[in-house]
Amino acid sequence: MHITRNRPLGKFVLRCLEKTNKPLFIKNGITLYIKVSENNRVNDKKIVEARYTSVILSQSSINDIIEVFDSFFRAALIAYVNGAEFGNDYKKGKRNKAIYSFLEKYNMNCGKSSFEKIVKMYYREKQAETNAKVLINRLL
Image 1 (cartoon, helix red, strand yellow):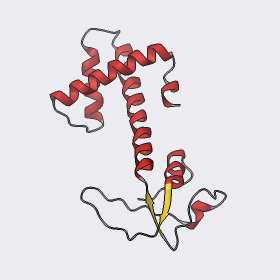
Image 2 (tube, rainbow, N blue to C red):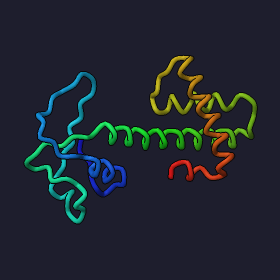
Image 3 (cartoon, rainbow, N blue to C red):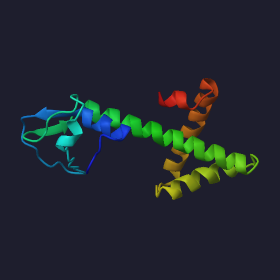
């Protein structure tokens, strides 16, 4: 996986990398290799020098990255469903169709129980959005 520092998320991931003296090993599941070029360190000393050493993501860094993607997912879902509802004049039954369409669009196959969890998550986020008034506040 090549990550560039020119993008905010790439810069965030590169800053989360830590040096390690432990030998790397492959765990069951997904193992990603991140290419860290020397150019990534230019003008940003918070990014570790990785030419001659191994780097890892700590569990807390992994959790932080997952939280960021979770926030992006929630914001995208709410924006998509809000747009679908607005485009259909808030007709009854369009909300669940919009959520299903969102999941299909991003190839997220899920069963009935997972779909219901996402619907509940949408309602919780929608209520929080109503209380916060602005969706961007949920990301900050």
